Length: 209
Image (cartoon, rainbow, N blue to C red):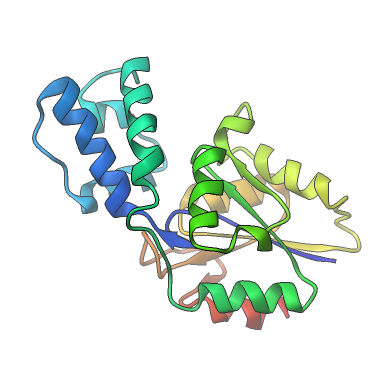
């Protein structure tokens, strides 16, 4: 058995416009702060160590009121502008047609992952779609990946698994779970020193098939 676990934002799809709109909605509504750029938002999200509440809302902690408003706004916003990166849909269908098992592990809430992937008509291709709300610790913890691997009854001696992501947290989660990784440079992060770097989605096929 071969298994490919995908990150979502910045790997499967581009969601930065909608994330930025919802963050700026909270900034304006609760703090009357000027809007942040998409570039700043993406850089902040991809930092290995960061305090997003400070970066986004200038508060030391992520207040419940901010989380609630963000999630309420993003629930409708998240399907306004996302798009799959060029070649992703074809690669997903090719993997499934070749008998490869595919799933999603995202630090976004699970409900948004289902909503966005459903909107883009690829959700049915994945066996498991799991977000950070379903675990005690998000990536780089291996917890999400371990749930997916357990779903497949993964045996490291006879099976092969990869994590594909655009973030150091994705790569570390794979290392912590004891599986291989591929760093995708077509999304939110254009470069990496990871051992395996893929510059376009079809490169995944060359490695897995």
